[in-house]
Length: 229
Image 1 (cartoon, helix red, strand yellow):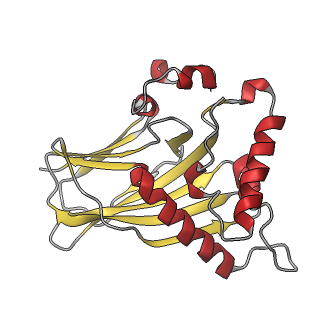
Image 2: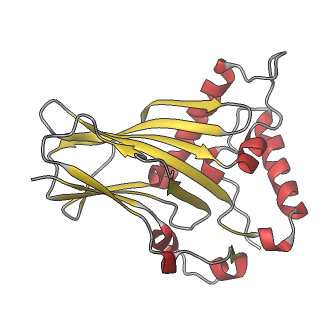
Image 3: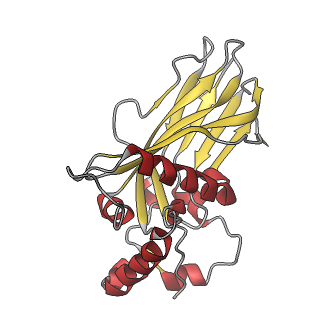
C-alpha cells in the first residue's frame, strides 16, 4: 500500500510537532477498517471569489477550503491550546505559513486557463487558518503572475490530480462570487456529471495501477467557467 502523508501540507508542522503528526497519521491509517483505505482520504468543501482589477483584468482567485471534520480533528492533534481549548492565532499563523510553502510543490492544486492557454500563477498572499472547534478552514488568495484580460472563456480548476484529496464547492446558493467583475461577465459552476462520480471509494490497488503523472482527479473535479464579452 502506498501512503502519502503530505495531505495538503498539513503534516508539515513546525518542530517538534512534525514527527508526531506523521506518526499519528500513519497509526490512524493502520487502525482504519479496510474499506476506508481508499481515495479520497480528505474531503474539502470550498468557496471562492474571482478577483479583478479596476481595468477589468483578472488578478486571481481567493479561496476558502474547509476540511472534513475527521481530518480537521487529526490536523490539530498535538497542537498546544490555550486554557479555553482554542488555538492561539500565532500558532495558526505558523501552520498557515508552512502549509502554504508545502502547497507550492503541487501548484496549489489550481489551474487557470484563458481561452485554453494556461496562465502562470504568482506566490500566494493573505493566507491564514481558522479553526472553530470542529472544522479547519484554510484561506488563501492566489494571484496571477500578471493580471490578464478575461478570455471569451476562462476556466478555473481546483483539484488533486491523484484524487487523494476531494475538492467540491459547497451547496450554498453562491459558492463562487465575483463582485468586481466587468459588466457582462457571467460564471457557471460545472460540477462533475453524476455518472463520472465514483459510486464507492476507489481503493489503493486502483491508484497503484495508474501510471505516474496520470490526471485521475480531473474527472471528479468541479470547475468555474467564466464567460466575458
